[in-house]
Length: 352
Image (cartoon, rainbow, N blue to C red; front, top):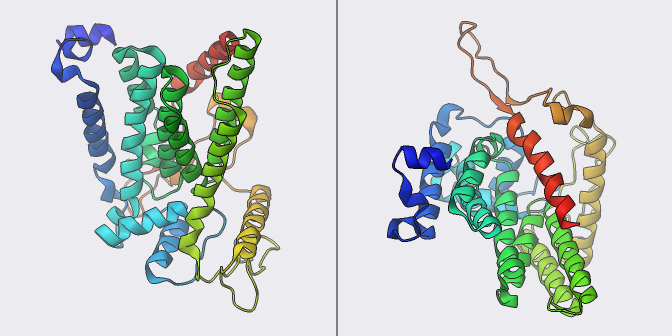
């Protein structure tokens, strides 16, 4: 990367004295360039595809106040999709706008995280390029699914967490990071993994400092407060669901499961007991979905070798010659994923 920067006279990217090399300029450039790439020909598929229909339909219900048709995941992601549809209409742009912006913000976060970890702009920019051309973020940022918004909140939380953990910023930065993690969990439960990993990281570091009699990590009570704030953000997003009818899951979508989620008489989310029932039913739905078989499913043993592409949109165009095909394939870049895996093991070895 440094070779190409010097060859094409882009020294401002690594110069410490140039004003245009400020982090703000680079972050803005990353945001606008990536937004252009994500928006480019977004209308190539102007109808919903893959799992979009679930979240688009659920987003409409937050606009019309109708029946909530998707309770397999928490509501925040679908609420965000409804904002996009309110602004740009019920079309491909309204459906996917939030995902595009989330992907662009995620790349900006990757740059900041890269700089915080390495203190070098070039390496941070390399991290952005590797993430952008890994295809995973590119595909997820152009489809109305929950992964891009969830990733955006997780990366934003990691930025503030690293500011606290590496740069000794005030405790408020740790609180902000856990707010973002709570909002990520309010999109998909995978957000809770970020909370657990950051807690584990702080506790391990705490033990190391205690061994050296240099305890300067936030106390257990402050960590507990951060967890409470994060969980409060998660449950706070359910406020938007108050008064909405919860129809349960269709037996056509979830085998042997067609129960009403909430009270069978009213079908409304009205109190904390209904809220607890919703969490139980979401867990049950996740377990039952996991047991279903899908044609795009692959075994974990095949993941390191990238043997199977997940086709979000099948590569065929009815009535066209065989050489004219379009498709949306979801698979990680094998080079990035393979070297990234060994790089993570290398870092873990030195951390331990």
